[in-house]
Length: 90
Length: 173
Length: 173
Image (cartoon, each protein chain N blue to C red):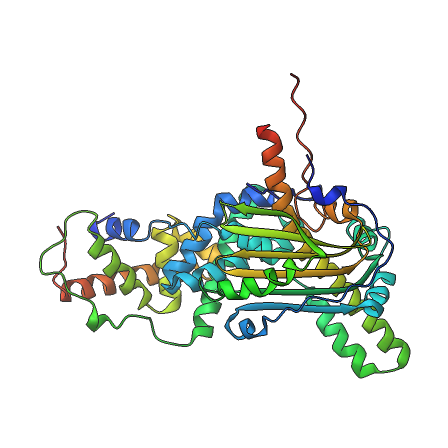
């Protein structure tokens, strides 16, 4: 390797992302809604019909419930982790 | 020791007025926003679609069975400093009403996140839950209205990819 | 530290994979885009994608290869979405008046900016060669281009970088 290649290796040394990177990824993980649902909802609306509409509503309500509980559980887990660490110190 | 939350008593359904979550002005600054408002009929409709054989969904069914409404606002920002103390106080001030009691407030120093949990009681029974979670680039408010089973909600950990926490083993003296 | 337990079917532990490879993924995006916020977003997307596709991963080394490949693709996609010229106009980059000593941070920053000015494919080839220490065959496999193309991109990129550095009075020590 010549001098430029050595300099390039140093200039392109790996860097770390922000300290809370992992936490951000995990938060987005519990937030993602299935993409198929948005597409399915659009198709079902077009197809129309009271039964289909009700089914779509139910599916969307179900997904919203799941999303709500994911977010709730995630925030409570911070509390639980804290309480666990207190318990371990006792 | 499990969270105090888990020791609250079961309550008969007692509809509680929702708190005012006046944070919509943050949506235009947020990179991602989640805004959920689920009244009773949608909760029941959604719960009926849950698969009892799926452990995650079965747990959700337990939690939501007594709920009258669910409100969640979550804002994720690209930069720090996009929300103010006034935004947090707009929730905290409402929690000073006599029917609300703060049961826990924690600071996660690793992630610089604070989480506060309040419970609303009515005639000695749990009638609502509010969570306020804030870190430098994210703000979340959760308001669950209705009868809440603390054991069920505490067991949301261990589902949806959220780690399950077990009580530490007691040390022999 | 909160950990996430993989499902029993996964061949790798997601949490461990994220810890091991996050700097690689972030650095590919950062050196390609030269924008920390964008690079973080791209890196997050890559790991979310890994989590969704965990069942496809056969081994830890497969995970490394998979992550590198997706990081490359997503970085290039992000650059195209950005649809603008590299952040720094090179005319505005301060020219060093003396030949730099080893590990000169000024030279490092100059090089990073010059790399961003390279066309996309050449830019990524340079990053994979000098950040990841991949040989041309490995680079070809990651990028899905012929080995011969990789080699000529490398040659041309080095020639171009040398020329730009010489114009700025930076040359071989």
